[in-house]
Image (cartoon, rainbow, N blue to C red; front, side):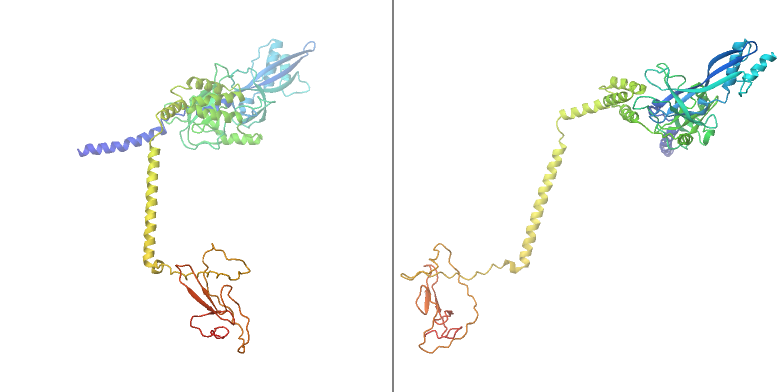
Length: 535
């Protein structure tokens, strides 16, 4: 039993590790990752236009004129900016073979009816005179030359558009390398296309350095046509290798001889085609080699050649619109992808891939495969079922908590006030009553009215408040001398009585007859002037 449990435990450890290891080798390449590059892949064909004039003066002088188109190279290129700049290999647009020798062999064989191979080698004839004229026809040009040769190179680029263009557009060389597999840079003669330009391919910053890194290659085996689309295949970069020598390929499972497979693709027309990184869809190099040895030169050599040619790689408006459409398409939002691809076709009507994806999106729009339609249906079902209950429950819970918190705070506040009242006895003592108001006396009948007018009967009782006055100077008077004093308007000389309401207490107030100040009930002399109160 213990052995069985141990075996299960080991199996549980080994299986996850194996599952995590297998994808590193037996991986699946992402679908559609090459869509960012293939619209910018073009077919490049170069030929030499040889205009040759043979001066036949064996008998009578005869000028024989011929024009020959001599193929130089063909392969695949990649557009790197909207203006139509193309990067490819030097061997595609330039050859080490002497096309003037080829033209001399051909015109001599046609005019003199002799057998001369149609190749790029110098030959000799048995007839000494004809052989002398043939050798004088070969370059370099001498004063005694029997041939006048003019060679021009013509390069044509054929983009991948929905209506195949048999003519393409002309391009000229701005930079070639010293070796056949060095990058070459071409620029179009005139405007390559409409104002929006051409689709371009993104260039990577560096080449992945890991072994068996997954990539894809793309190119054309002939001029683009409805029955001849671009060729795309997968591969894996091997570790090591840099510079113009190239980096090799290796199948991590050793099931496919990738160098041989890619070498065959090079011979078929993918020479100079882009090598596309599998994660981001960027160009990391160009396909070189041939035969049984397909290799790659890295993006560092490509960007160096572009810098020497003063060509700046950049993306254009077509690429931005196409990337947005691809995002919707590969995430299965076909309803949103339809107008996005239509926008791309408005900018570039010949976009083959946009037209193909638009057709697919129109077919799948609104179906079960359309993620946007499924989400819309799910949202409609949720709205038909009514609003969810949980927001109301949450709101009710929050309200209850708020009420409880408010009640708790109010209870704590009242408790604190009671504790403070118990601790501070002064705050609990009721305030002492103030001085009782002194009622205003009623005027006596027949009393002379005050010059300031009669008092307001509706006013409240006036409270008499004692006021302090500065001391008056003492006045000495002899007995019997009259003294001018203030008189009470309602009372007689010497005293004034004040009456109040029936329910009020009667207060009798005495005043000094000399200075008019108030006198206390037991005072015999005025406290201010010293005058006797009984005088």
